[in-house]
Amino acid sequence: MKRKIIHFISLLAFLFVAIPSQAQDIRNSSGSYIGKIESSGRVYNSSGSYSGRFDGDRVYNSSGSYIGRVESSGHVYNSSGSYIGRVESGGRVYNSSGSYLGRIESSGRVYNSSGSYIGEARGVRTDWAAAYFFFFRF
Image (cartoon, rainbow, N blue to C red; front, side, top):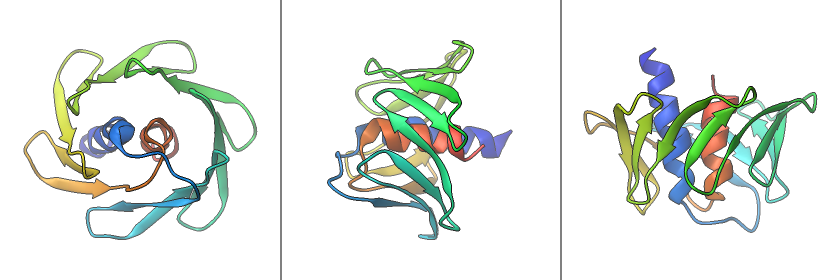
């Protein structure tokens, strides 16, 4: 559960990172490469395998099935339309029951609810980077 919360924070928090012009790496807190997102929306895991794609605010898995969306309002929904959390404009992240999960700084550095650094993604389109952590890391 703690791992899911950390990834959820990472997912949503990355909504505040800059939009890329090319593929950008996603890294964990130790700096290890965990995936990339191309400017076309194609997503790859740490092994280089195709994991899915983004089409606007909608997210699809590698077989083309719709798996969820991240709205411009910061609200996140799964494929059945259930609300699963939100990101506020200041970088604070909450789950669906309103519990604080962590924050992201404008630099792209992500912290959990206890203030521990857990990772970053610089230059990755914000909504896609956030969705990567939620939809492709769980």
